[in-house]
Length: 345
Image 1: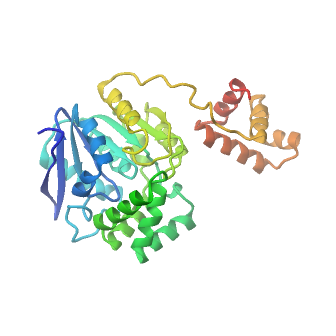
Image 2: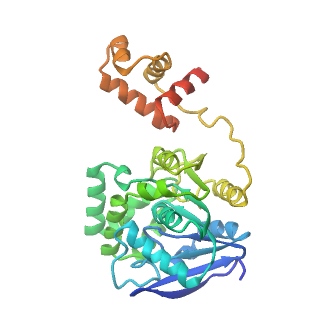
Image 3: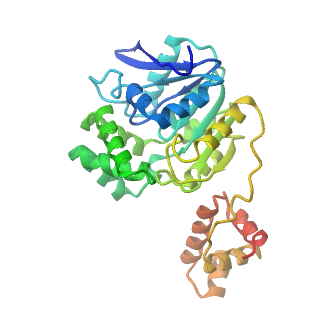
C-alpha cells in the first residue's frame, strides 16, 4: 500500500468495533488515542495528511479511532480511563497482528501509548510522546476544567469553538470553523464531554515510571493547550527518556513547523542523534526579580535567607523560582540558577 492511499478497516474488540487504517510501508508506527478523531475526516485535512505521508515514507503508519468516536462503534461511550483505553488498543493490535512496532502518543494519546509500552515492552521497539502530560488535572485550574466540560456538555457548538481557540492559536477564522465542524462530526455532545472529562481525570504517572523502552519526549515551548512544564515532567518520569524542545505554540504536530517534528521523530526511530539545538533558552524573558532571586539561589541561600535579603515572603521567593523554572523548562532550582549564571543579560 502506498502512502497516498488510505483504506479504513474494522475489527472487533470485545463488544465494540474499532476502525483503523494503515498507509506506507516499513516498521509499523501506531498513532492513536486522540480525544477526538475521525479517520476519514482527518484524512481530508491537507496538513494532517501531509504529516502522515511524511512519516509513511519509511514506516507503516497505523491509526485508529477510539470506541465511541469517529468511524468506530459509537453506540456506547468512549473509554473512561487509561486502563479502558489500553484494553481497546491491546485488542486492536492483537487482531491486526504486528509482532513489533513503534508508538507515537500525542496529546491525550500519550497516556495509552505509555501504558502499552509499559505493559508490552517486548512488542514496542520505541516510544515517542508529543505534547504529553502526566496528569490531566495539571492542564488547567479546577474551575477552568469544570467550566469547559460543562460548556461542551451543554452547548457542544460553543464548546467546540472554545477548544478551537486553544488548539489552533494561529488559524484563520475559516480553519477554526472547519475544526469546529470536525469536532462535532467526530463525536456526539455526550461522548465529547465524557472524553474531555476522562482527559482531565487521567493520571499516567504509574505507567510512565514503568516504561523501559527507548523513549523520546517532544514538546513545543509555547504550546497553548498543554503547558511546556508538563512535557518536561513526563521526560523526568520516564527512566532514560530523551527530551527535545521544539519551537512554536501550535499544539497539533501537523501545524506550525511540522517538518521539525517529523525530523525529530524519524531521527529517533532510526537511532540517529537529534540535531544539536542552538541555545534553546536564548529568548527566555526572566523578570529582574526572578534573576535576582536565582542569583542568590546560586550563592547557596535558602528561600528564607533570600526573603530576608530582598524583604519578601518565603512564599513569594518560592513563586519566583517556580515561575522561572517553568519559563526555562528546567527540572530543578539548581538548574535554573545555573542558567542565570551562564546567560547574563
